[in-house]
Structures are given as C-alpha cells and as structure tokens.
Image (cartoon, rainbow, N blue to C red; front, side, top):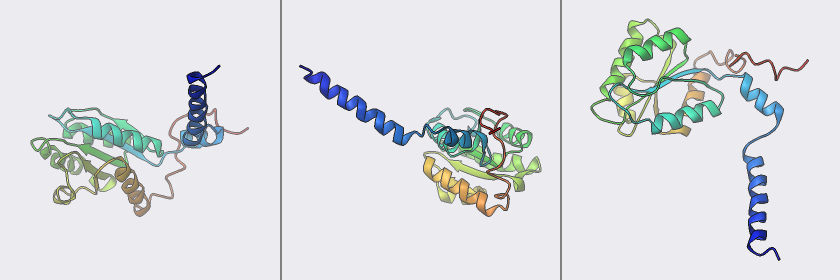
Length: 182
C-alpha cells in the first residue's frame, strides 16, 4: 500500500532524528551560544579582490563557535580594516586574498593597524587560495588560516595565549535578555 512513499517517510524520520543530533534545540545551549562571545572578529576580502568563498566559510565557522563576526565584505581597503578594528575594539582582524596581485594589501593592513596604534592589541589572520604560512610569517600576521576549522582552532588558541582569555567567554554578544533566568 505505501510502496515508495513508505521509504520516503522512513528517510524523513531519519532526517529529523539526525538534524536533532546535529543542531541542538536545547534552550540552554542556544542561550549560551547567543549570550557569550569568544571575541570580536573583523573579517573581509582585501581591496581589489571579489572572491568571498573562503572568507564566508571562515566567518560562518567563527560565528558558530561563539565569536562576534563583523563582516566588512569584499574589496575592503587596509584603512577600513584598521578603522573598523579600532572602532569596534576588535580582538581579531582576518583578511582574505585569492589573487597574487591582491595579497600585497594584507601587508598594508598590518601597516595600517600599526599606524592606528592598535597592532599590538589585535590578533591578525590571513587566508586565501594562494596565501601560505610562509606569507603570513613574512608579513607579520599572527595566524595563517588554511580553512574554516583551522581559523577557529587557531583563533581559540591565540585567545588562550593572549592573557585576555579570562575576560572572554563572559562578554555579552548582544543585549538579548530573553535567555536570562529570573
């Protein structure tokens, strides 16, 4: 009687079960994620570059791990990275470049952060299809992110090393009071 529809029903039920395991629906878990921040991240693709896939993937991964991510978009000038980092009192500045001709802007970001007097207050990260650990070392970036998981693990490790880790994790990410207990 059910035939193929029965198989679809079984698959639907299995999908629901799997999604409940993968995506927690606990109010406490979602409130914890919503009200805590591991730090503020300024992220963008450098000036002259419109490739956003890696940047978007890293931004999503960082947000999922409790970081407050401020995405400046693509084609962002070095001055804008520095100004945003200073204004938002960012903990991290991640820049992405996917072309050899635009990688030079990652050096300029390091220079602009120094000129703004905040280079020693932020952790810088670089990534992109042509970016390597050697490039990150050459320009003075703190983190080379080969992908989303790498960016998250290195950002968390950098926080632990920065002596600010005692302050992180208890910083409200937003003003939402809906998760507070009476």
